[in-house]
Image 1 (cartoon, rainbow over the protein chains, first blue to last red):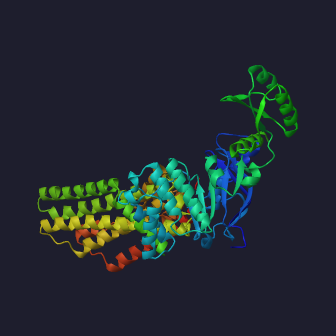
Image 2 (cartoon, rainbow over the protein chains, first blue to last red):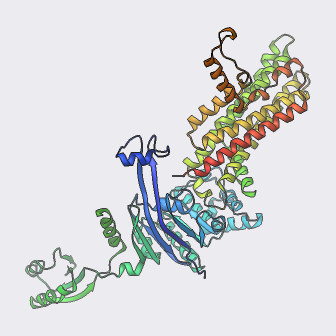
Length: 331
Length: 261
């Protein structure tokens, strides 16, 4: 395994000078200083993102819309020049061609040359990696089958559905058998079967020692496959770490399920644990800390209730995500 | 080199599979065929008219088609985001741009060759000779197209197709008469002021760096039987390729700095 991280980002910043005169040197800066909007204004899309992805791991890059995920990925891919900051891909500086030869990328909402058929399309991309004719042909065929598009091999891409485009997009990201795969919203536009296929491909890549860095809005998928996640809010990483560490953080809620309980007791216990919910013949309560559990259970048993279970609630990624996003917004 | 070739082939393939391009070429050929009818209607001037009108149509339609495709070439890549999957590959931005240029130049070579063949066919139908001077004229028309493809790519590397089209057409229109601007002296000789001299000097200076497209219009020579020497064709070709190279270099510098938002 390689000694250096597969991907690092160190204080990456991107500021866009927009508006009619924004592109002219100095106008965006001047407009920002004067507080003028309209003809020129500045947008701070990414404000110092720092993170690191280790070789062989699956890293989920999360954040609400407009947080700066895609801009960060575009800077890593050489599509946008960073305003400040640095980064490395496979131990080499951003933009290095040797690193790019070992890199696969799928952009968000991809669009491809629709006059080409899948085989032509993948072989064209293979040429950009200087693959030999036979290798290009064989890899293209294998990938078309791998992403489940064998039945559409004779169709030009203009006749592909959104899901099929996503699949051929994943195929082009893998044509060079990359060591690092960067996927921007790879599950977007896919049906449940398609999402499972993508998850399987990502797992397969991990099993082969590849590194996967991807963004997704579908937190359920992230939770299922990621080793580590980084959350970006308003252009800054607000949380980063192993998925289990984020989800196993001390929970505020403990769920208590009681049986053999009448409505009067429920009403009384609800004073300590608001909004109980009925599940069949049982009632589910939630208290906010471990310290409250003992007194609550004692009261319940004294009132004649039967204790069914006491379960500390593991936070879902969605809860962590929403909490971090709100914290980020509040800053 | 293989990357430039790959992008070039893809650009060529995209153009020839494009219905708009096919329609434009068919229209140009139809117009060319119309010259046969016009020429046939003229009395004893069929061949002269065929040369004059035929070369005009080959040259003008080829340049217009080149501008139309050229100004859309990069814009489409960026607007449709196809470039998002190309740039992260181990290809330099300049290689991509040169590939696009090569692909369009090759497409236009096919287009000019087809129009040239149609013109030759018409000469054959009129029982007239499609001489070497006609081949030279068609070749020079192609070289003009090559220069205009480079100019279109330069503008499209930082602007919208509409603005790029206007600017490129402006370069073409002025370029056709730039030889006259190069020797321009404003005002009547007896009343010429210093302001006249200064403005004339500026225009002459601009004319020196403007592409001299008048080199590529040898129709008067062909029509009147004046010879076009191979050395002239060679130097005009060299000038065109050099000019295109400089323009492409500028386009590469602009394209290199660009953010693909």
